[in-house]
Length: 223
Image 1 (cartoon, rainbow, N blue to C red):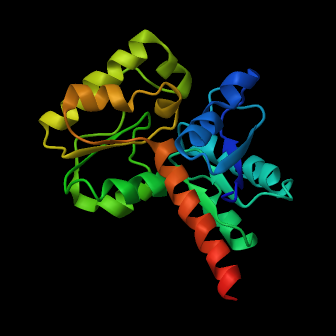
Image 2 (image 1 turned 120 degrees about the vertical axis):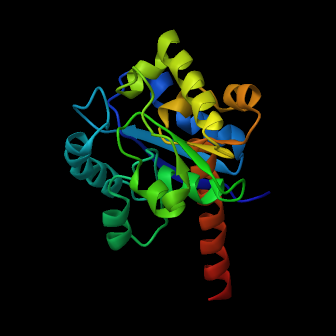
């Protein structure tokens, strides 16, 4: 039987609904049956991370949660802004994967002009580093200011409109820059409407996590 890897997954929004809390974990287990996922969320941030101030508040909370895990093969920060990823990598010996880095990495296989579709005014750092001057348009979706807005019909419609706008501006691939868009599972709809590849952050973070877990096992075997 193939080895199952245990992932620790951090949601960067305070969630009291267990079903919603575990949504990204369920998606990862669906996409990658090799995973068993345990999800946790940060405290006292019901609207999550949507600017520099809320990210600064979240970073120590994320680090605290992650350090409480003793038995995971890798940690996934399920946020396109990759909060606390660098800090955790400096302290932990297991892989730490950020959704933003993973999405940007995968998107580069599908085009040379990138539409970054998110909820923040600025393009997340991982996307700007990877895509540079090849980003078209702006990042923020009209009328969407937090992940909660994505769960409304108006928010979903705004995401579709933004994707069409980015395609019109020349995007060859759309990189989703908010994992809340994975929560509402909108990537397939956007691909159908725009007829270009759309990279889902949760699917991307899982792919990179799986590679990192396999790489770690291989290194242990060779060692």
